[in-house]
Length: 113
Picture 1 (cartoon, rainbow, N blue to C red):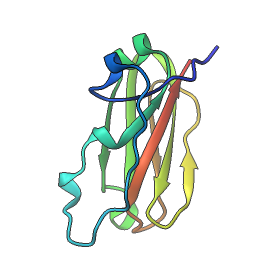
Picture 2 (picture 1 turned 120 degrees about the horizontal axis):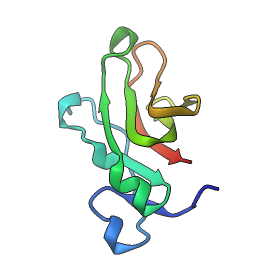
Picture 3 (picture 1 turned 180 degrees about the horizontal axis):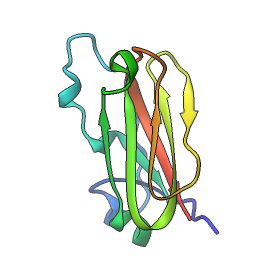
Picture 4 (picture 1 turned 180 degrees about the vertical axis):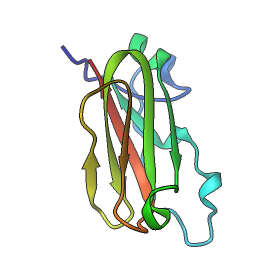
């Protein structure tokens, strides 16, 4: 059974928080992006065990979103700068989703069960 609480990292104790993410600017370096742009759809207990991050190590510098949640199944959905959304399979402990060749990431959402 999945909980449907929306959380952002660092704000889990504050209750429900919405996060609006803008598209990355052409001048922003990918290293400036952090896991704070990932919105969590899970219980607070499971979210506390998870770590998330982005990189641009996909094909042609494509954006990738990662979620590592030890002891639970996790699925992550990435939203790319061109509007496409890609979802990983349910995986135990770790999941990754990536954008198409050369497309940067915008945000991501993950769920645990």
